[in-house]
Figure 1 (cartoon, rainbow, N blue to C red):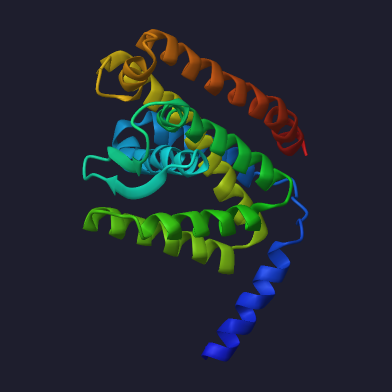
Figure 2: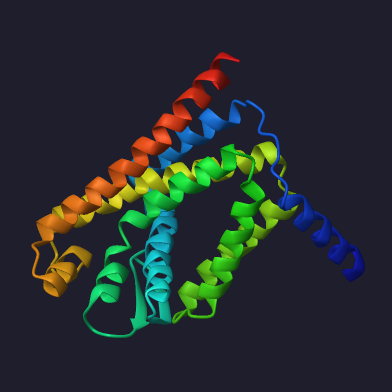
Length: 244
């Protein structure tokens, strides 16, 4: 394939991405959801998949930080699948609080949003937006491990957008949404159980003088709300798919 043919293919795919596709009932959808739950529950698989949840968690800090007027200066995912995001701005204040708070609610919120978008036929838009956000974050990476991980995610996203069939792309994005929702709960449970003052709830307690328990409870409420919203939309779709 020459460069001209590739450019024409990209133009055609981009134009097609701006039109909602018809989502056909398919057993790929319940299979994708079941697989997502399995990879979050099985420890050996979770060690690998949790990286995606960490990336979204840290991107949540970065995006909200920028929206609050802070400067996004660094993005790191460590070999143990933990991570941290660096933003520059006032050390205290509402913007710093929102930036710090964003990490734990964002994976579940993003997971629910992309799952709903995929079921509405906008899976290509989800993939395009994901690619662009990953590309921006790539240029703020501060370790070779982070660069390699983001390049891998970029290639996978671009490949799925460019060559993936609609049913397969929808199933993959729906499965990813489920991973982010369930994995977001697992991440939150871990930080609550550890009670580490250096983690987000402890930092928020220091910034606001409200106890970490309050912030953990607020995280639970936010995650519960988006999980309930997604469930009310998914249950009818899955029921009709299985009974089809």
